[in-house]
Length: 426
Image 1 (cartoon, rainbow, N blue to C red):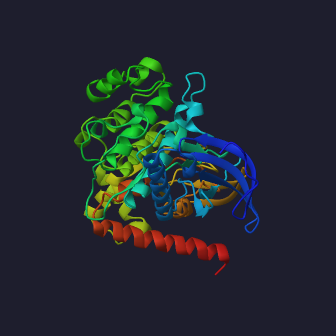
Image 2 (cartoon, rainbow, N blue to C red):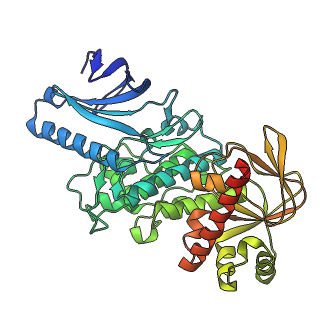
Image 3 (cartoon, rainbow, N blue to C red):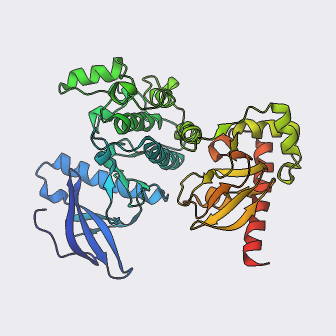
């Protein structure tokens, strides 16, 4: 489509904003919902090859079906799909001033490491959701990962995606489609594929974002494929000396050639990224208090009064026991960390816009709204004295026993209900 149409369906076309192999993307206006949208338009009739035309229509309907299965904050929302004449179109959310991660994969424009890790964490969360719906993306690359103006990830372009049958955890792909530098070894070998193929591709994105170099790159396609199948990528520090050592094993595990050595799930990769973020970004001290003392301190808190000692041990193993000096920021407004905190000792202040609005003491909890709603923090938490706190992420809690999870969920909901009741004055 060379000419910009004035209208598609009920949508008034404003401008062309992108062109790809699968179609053209326009900015449009929805007169009923009174909002701007993006419309991806496919025109199969313009193709002379019947086989390619049928394939394009097939991909369109698959993509529309897949988007119908997905509704997640880190995945681009698709509102509708339709046909008009010879055209097929998808109606998607329009993000003003969006950009893709490709902008930050240049050596002269790399993101600060904490920000890159935060974005990769969001990618993991979006992928984990898609995988939980039996959807494989199969084209994860920087150009298909969008960022909103506030740096929220939006996974996009599910045009090559596949849906796993509920009775199987893998599939066979007849054709190798996608960007060669981001395709996993098992796909190149035409072996059975599962969600770990996406994890490999995200490992490539991670390497690219941190260094400005792809892990494997060669203009000769045959040599490139041999590198992917047999070589190990150079250490991250070869390209970027300030990369912390803790990131090397994460990217290596994501890029493992054998799926048995790769992260088993995007949630596991998210947990490691989260652990890195806690250790490096907040620069807090991980306490060296012994296990017995930790169990004794937890047992004295109301939150853990119904926990058996073995379950308290699981909680300690699943969380991170952190210590903060007076005046240290524990959480900041806008943070995307989705963990839940229990204060073990000390006092902390709750701030909005820099003003103190409440105090927290031993046994108090915070972070429950972000933990549930998965949204940026709306307040800041700053230590007023020396503070010891247990920080618990959902990914790590899921690795505990069912009994531990049930008790934690019960107390968590009680805390949340109490917080909401006090807010409403009831």
